[in-house]
Length: 238
Image 1: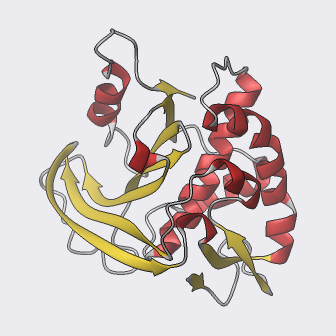
Image 2: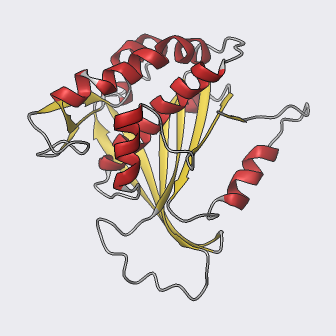
Image 3: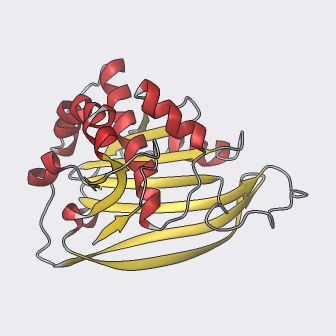
């Protein structure tokens, strides 16, 4: 199944091209489940002063294996230009991480991996045709090749079979004051924050981004303090 937009979500240009959500170069490292369909999950909810107060869940069934899923939401120029450069820059460190190798990322490598997950987080929103990430963030990653500083991206290793090719997204309407009126948020722009989780082979990644300062502070502190039974930190921010 392919999601379709008439014009590029980054530059407004055309013609639109196919964008593999799971990049083609990584397909050999992603497990095959033998099914001709895949499921995706989207959560919506409301946060007030950093506390979740409401939420709903939508599960969808898509044709084709998960790793072959495509979206037609970007133009050929963006896809083969600056987006292709982000893919190429992240390929080597992502491959090692997906294979579960013990890796110490340099600052540059970590930034390249973070850019890849930021790009996929933006594109992934269009699976459900709802948008939470502000246009200024699109422009930042397009012009600099990296996400803005308020993006929080965490990675770690895992051995959970069902997460070796997986993706979940939570879109949120949030504010820091109980007096804030959220009734003005209407589709398709009813959200102003999101969290996204990825499973790629033995690599797990979690992304949180909000246009409201402080909305995810408690959320990120919990992630920062998560540890295994051996006392090792499960996720590291990049």
